[in-house]
Length: 475
Figure 1 (tube, rainbow, N blue to C red):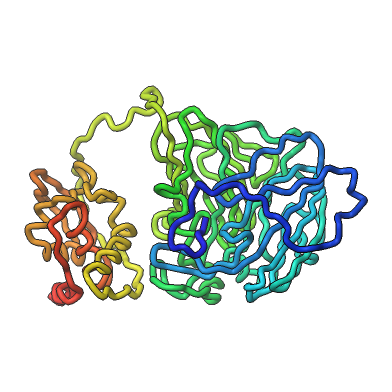
Figure 2 (tube, rainbow, N blue to C red):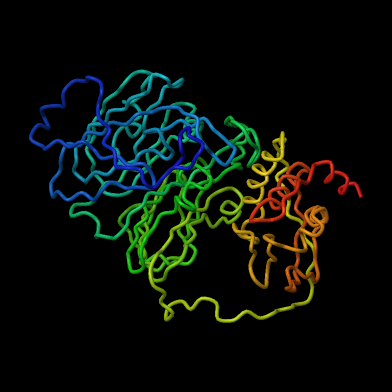
C-alpha cells in the first residue's frame, strides 16, 4: 500500500483494524433490530479480513474515513493522495450476501475537498454516491442490503470524478456468497491503478496531478497498491510450498485495462470479473478499469513469483510489479532449475539504445547525495542485469562488484553508458561477449549512478562528476 507520509514503504505487518465511530448519528433503524449487529473489520492492503463464518445475515456497521495526505509514490517522489482509510488503495471491506450494511463516511476536517463513495456492490442511485456527499469535517450515513455476491470496486464519485479516482480514491468490497468461499491457505488484496504527474516517471519532489496527461490516458506510473515497490523485497507477500493462494485483484483505473499475470504460475481458478463464472487453467486475465477478478493457484515450488500487468512496459518501466515469495523444499520433478549453460552465437546483433525518460535530475550537492541519487538510477535501470549485489549474471552480464575492468579505469564506464559496448571483454578473469545498450541518461544521472557503483559492494570508491560526463559526450 502507499505509505502516508513516512518516506518508507508500507509494511505487511499491518494489523487488522476495526474503524470505530467517534461521532454521534441517529440509531440504526429498528426495522433491522432483529439482526445481530457487527462492526466491520477493515484491513489495509495487502491484508484481507478473515472469512465470514456465520451462516445468517447481520447488520454490519462500516466506518470509513476520507483523508488527504502526502505519501511516497516512488523513491524520492511524493504525491498528495486522496484516500479511503488513510492509504491507497482504500480499506478492504468484507461482508456476506443478505447483510444489511450501515455505512458511515467521515471526511476528515483537514480535507480540502468534499468526497463521497460509489460502491459497485450497492443497488441504488450512484451506488451510494447520491447519499454520501460529505464536506470536510462532516459525516454521512446511508444503508443498503447486499443483494449480489462478488468482488466489487468502490471509488469516490465527486466531481471531477476522474481526478478523485486518479488521486487514489478506490478500494474493494467482497460480498461473500451464502456458505462462503472455499477455504484457502493465504488471501491477499492487490489493486492496480495509474498516476498522472506533472513530472515524468522518477522526477523527484512533490508531484501534482496533471489533468492534461490524464486526458491522454498515458500515465507516468502504473502501480500495485499505490506506489512503486509497495509489494517487493521485504514487503513481498508470502506463501509456503503446497499452499493455495487466493488473490483479490482490483483495478482502480481510472483509464487502463490490466492484463494481470503471475510469472511462473498458472491460475487454477479465475472468478471472471469478480463474479460467479469460474474459468480454469488461465495464464493471464483481463481486469477492466473499475473491475475486479479473484484468482486462485497452488504454489508447487519455492522461489519468487513476479506479479505484473503483462502490458509489460507498465511492469518494468512504470511500476506495475509485485512479488510473491514462496518458501519450502525444491520439487525437481516439477521444476529442475538450470541444467546447462552453453554459448549461443546467432548472426547479427548490434548496439541498441535504451530511450531515457528525459527527466530533470536532482542535482547532488555533495558526494553522499550523488551516491544516494545514483542508487535510485541503478535500481531503475541497471538492477535487473547487474543484480542488487552487483555480481551480475554468470555468463551473461559481468559483475560490477570488484570489477577490474571498471575499477582500473572508472572514466571509461562513461563511454559505455553513453555509447554502449559490444564484443569480447575480460572482467575479473572471465570472458564476456555481449551487448550493453547505450542508455540515454542526463549527465547528472550518469555521474550519479557511476559514483554509486564505485562506492558500492566494497569497491574502491571515487566520484564521477557531471563535467566529466559532459566532456565525454562532446567527443
